[in-house]
Length: 446
Image (cartoon, rainbow, N blue to C red):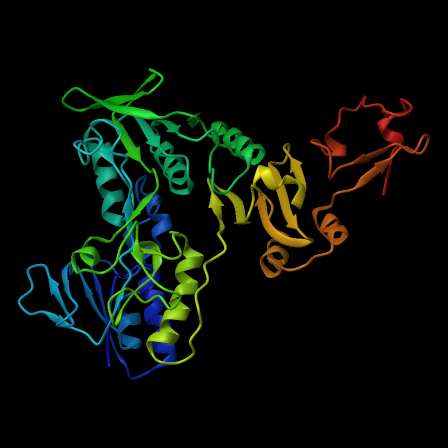
């Protein structure tokens, strides 16, 4: 059997790795439009200020493919799928590529909002997105070759903020413009978002929230942006990191069922026989994930199923991000902003230490762990990861977070840190007991 994987990102490479682990003999080919072996995409912004070189990004070099008996075809763009013939057409290729089973790991491309005037027409001419090594190199060359002094990043998500940090390290005046009223709207709540904003601003990066970009200002070249509220920000380069769009065109053209993404079932099968898809390009149960844990989970399920081994059903992936964002440890997992209409059904334990830039939030429902934010503090990461959706002891969770009740020995009034906005240690030195006016120093930790 010959399995062909289109896409050399994390979804494609993990699928190949899992297939080879289960079957040493199956013929396995990978085709990639990019000319590079599998690399760590999230670190590509560091190429812009020259902190790293391309070789530093490579995770699996050519020897890895050879040792695992995987034939890799880099710099080969697939332009057409012929499901009835079970063939692929390569751009400028003389012969079609045959397959028995086809895996589409096509990934995604950066989204450029069509509502932003001049954005599309100025791509590569002062407007850029960042997704690949070549994107980073193009940005670096443009900055060097055009005497760029000011930069605007549209998008305050994970990639947008990391990109802003690297652009700032190029000694550019850097501004992040975010549509939502807080940074990382999918990963953080309002309070933690404010803490992150403060840390980013300490780095000298300006942050503008609740701002919808209306137009890229041009006069032969990029001059800045105009917001819908009329404000204008000047810059010589604009970097758009406003989410992703699944790559679906060649699947759609082949008659494969697509919506926002390539539609798949619980076994990652598409609507065409012997054609599978996973990763950023798919839509499962009306949802697009676009996160690394989903790619990893899907690759295991697909590898087993495509080889006719264990049939494990995919039922979605709990959103999880664990990484360093602008140098600060962050884990965001599960439901971190419970619906307001269900407020009575949820319990929240939170600890905000703004002096040390640490924020921990635990979200419970029916005594089960449903979500968490660990910002600037990672010691509870293992516990949280292992106990998601499991029943946990609330008192034990308070101990892990080091949340305490402080009691006044004179009148018995209690300061419960789980219900207060400020930790007891961060209260002013002249804080007085609400019950009797006693000194803060007299309180006892329970």
